[in-house]
Each structure stands twice: as C-alpha cells, then as structure tokens.
Image 1 (cartoon, one colour):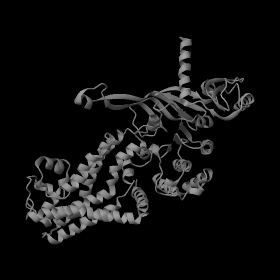
Image 2 (cartoon, helix red, strand yellow; image 1 turned 120 degrees about the vertical axis):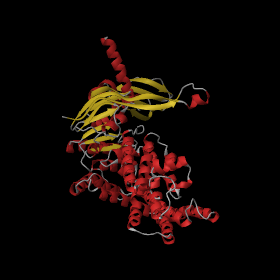
Image 3 (cartoon, chains in turn orange, yellow; image 1 turned 90 degrees about the horizontal axis):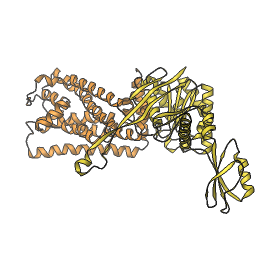
Image 4 (spheres, helix red, strand yellow; image 1 turned 30 degrees about the vertical axis):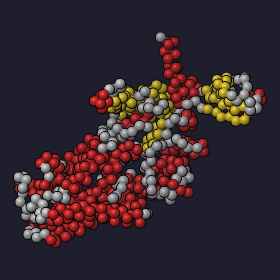
Length: 267
Length: 332
C-alpha cells in the first residue's frame, strides 16, 4: 500500500496528459470555470448593495466564508468531482472492470479523471479569500492561525465525505446524480453564507447532520471574533478536525456497504 | 487440484416493476418487487490448467456466475472458492491473480496509446519491471501488436483492440483467465488468430481458462470440457466431443440454386426447408462431409451460392432438454 501515492500520480498524470492534448479547449475550460464562479460572488455584492450587513456579517466577512468555501470545495471537486460519473460507469458496465483490478474501487473511480479546469474556480476563490484577509481586521493569535491552517484539511475531508457518502446511493439508484448534487454543489453554496440566515430545519440538516458548518462557518466565528448566535457550545468552533475524521469514517463505511450491494448490469 | 470450486451458488436480484393490470394513479405508481433467480444453485469445479467452455442462452446466468467468480458480485447463497479465496471478501487478492476480458467492456484507456495503457497496468498490478518487459515483448510478437502500440485505443479496430485487451489481461501472469465473448464481432481471420493464441497460452503457461461464448467454434477449437447452463442451472457438464456428437453433430448446408425446384435428394442429408431457389439441407458429420454434399448438389442442379450453418448454442441447449426429457421418459 506504500506505493499508492506513486500509482495515484501515474494515473492522474496520464489523465492530465490526455487533457493537455487539446490545449485551447483546456484553456477555455479554465477561463470558463473562473468566470462562471465569479458570478456567484457578484450575487453577494448585489445583496450588499441593498443591505449594510447580512445577519451581522459585513461584505468582507462574507467574502471570507465565500473564499474559503470555494477554494476548499473546488479543490475537492478537482480531485474527486468525477465521482458524479459513477452512475454512468455503473450503467455502462465500466464499474465491472474497476472491480476486477487489484486496487480499491474508490481509489480507481477517483483516478479515472482529474478536473483540472477547476483551477479557474480555485483561483477565483483564492482572489476573493485574499481580498477578504486584506480587508477584514483579524486579531491574530496562535489559535487563530492554527484554526485557519487546519481549515483546508478538515474542510476538504468533510466535503469529500459528503461526495463519497452521497454517491453510494448510486449502487441502488443508478440515476441518483441530481439528488446528490443538491448536497455536494448545494453544500458549496450553503457554506458561502453565514448559516444563521437559513431556516432552522435546513440548518440542522446541512450544518450539523451533514456537518457543513464545520467546514468554515464555526472556525470563522472564532477567527473573525463573531458572536455565536446558534446556541451551540463554543467548543464546536474548534471541533472541525474531529468532525472531519468522523465524517470520513462514516463515508468510507457507507461506500464499502454500497460496493457490496453493487448489482452490475446485464451481459 | 481444483482452482475454482463453486457449491450451490445462487444469485437473486430484486427487480421492481409495475403491477400488472394496475389501475388509477396510485395503482400505476405502486411497484411490486419481484425476486429473480439469475443463478439458481450451480455447482462445479475447475482443475488447474483446464480450459472450460461456459455456455448458455442469453439471460441464462453465465455473466452473473462469472461476476461472482471474479468478486464483482456478492453471491446470495452458496460458496465460491477461487484459488482457495472467497472472491467477494478477498476481491483485491483475487484480482491480482486473475485476468479478465469482457468483450463488451474495455480495460484500456480510451484516449491513450495502447503502450501507455500497458504501462499504467504495470503500476496497477505492481508487475516487476523485467517480467513486464518480457511479457510485452512476447505478446507483441504473438499477437502482432507492433504496428499499433503507439495508436490511441479509440482509433483501433475491434480486432486490434481485442488483441490489446488480451495482452492487458495477461501482463501480470494471471493463473486464471476469464473470457466473456472474446471473439464477438470479429471476422474469421481475427477469430482464428485469437483462438490460436489462447490455445498456445494454455499449453505454454498452463493458464486456466473459463470461456463464455455464443460461438461453438470457440468451444470446439479451445475447450475439452463444457458447462451448459440455462435458467440459472447447470444442464450439462462434460466432454465437448460427446455433446457435439450427441446434439451438435448436425450442420445445415444452405444452397442458392439458379432456379426453384423440388427438394434435392442427396445421400447423407435431408432437405428441411425450401424457399424458392433456396434450400436447407441438414446433415450429420458422421454421414457426410460438407465437400461431398456440395459436389452432390452441384451434380444435380446449378449452384449459385452456399453457406454452412453450425448448430447454434440455443439449438444445442434445446436438444439437450429434448434429450433429457426423452431419457427421463424412457427410464420412468
């Protein structure tokens, strides 16, 4: 198993080489992903054109959420977003070929492609995040630096867990893709706003049952020194790494459960 | 020494479908779940080095069995032992030691040259460098891949791709090779070449081969033993020669004559169908050869064209049923 990272790089670089065969199309994809996602931020600017603050958050503070959400989510999308092709692979029987190779099924699905075009969206997120850091007044201390430094890791693990856990339903409902998108791409949108603006039931589901609040909102409460309006214990602001590991374990178990229920297609 | 042991194997699929004769909105939306037994209590064993043909009509449960042997599907009942491992529990350990060619699926990277697919497989299977080089060199020669190793897989012809698939399945020196319709859609020359290669592989390397096919030619050329399944059960397990003589010995010569005429009377064959100038003559291989028949027909009428039809798997399966029914009736 020690050589898995090396095998990963081999497989991914083969995908990248294939994509770079069409340079112009690749460049257009990256540009497209940059401009398409920046429209989402323009929507936030429009809101602040009418309001001075959103649930007590300034534009700069919302930009902090937006930037972290986009950078983390789009990196995960780049690495494993092609999981949303799983339904097609199951339907076309390509998943059978995955099952007869001496590597984990998830590892193979994830190495089937590489979403390099997401670089555009990641870059866009980084720019917004940079602007937010520059404009927001943060009272830096060791805790805040550490909390910010762990965000990409636990955030990515949480988003990836949502992706993997969600896609296990493909093993039962081959055409479940759109329903899953509501939680993956929907999760990205959800985490770009301060979550107290959402209704109670949506917040309970997406923020805590699916632990999206731990991606950026709860750590941001501490980093930006915001009040905790949801009435959850203050300690949860620091719980992201633990929650991320638990999410990953749950997702991994669900995935393996799903693979054992894989039915394959005829012939 | 059995390398594959299957005992009372079962696979049941839950299929949901609309209720028959349902009325009203609720009735139409309500679905009932039906349990379909794709594999219904199969037992057999394959010895190391054997080449076994696994045949049956569409939907008989062939592919489902292969998928349980390879660890793709988890059995609903019974046991599978492949190289003393349970494939669904030890999928990865089994995968390292088997090769799989599914005629309808590809294991190659569509947009990469064939050689690049091989190189990736070397890493996936962790094949030692020397072994890999030796195998690529040998298969390139045996299957004549040299001309298209650098061609992207999507540009290969079906025959070329199939030769690539075979190589890809064999690079890691598997002990068992599962072939599902390896000659489907290939022309006569390509088929012959692949059969030749597989026979040689079995002799040289002692690879155990389990072959699923609709082509009796594949079985005749390659297998000494054949398993016939239908409705998820084994209906024949034994010698290919015996079954051929018993059920598959009859071939059909189809002749196109210049003019319509009465059924041609030639020794060793009987006319089973006449359609204008076209006639179907059925003959048993012990009674006549195709060549002698053609000569006899040509002596009696002007012959424009001809084809010889081998018995289809479906026919053989049907005859096995008829034979069993007759046998049961005679012993009852």
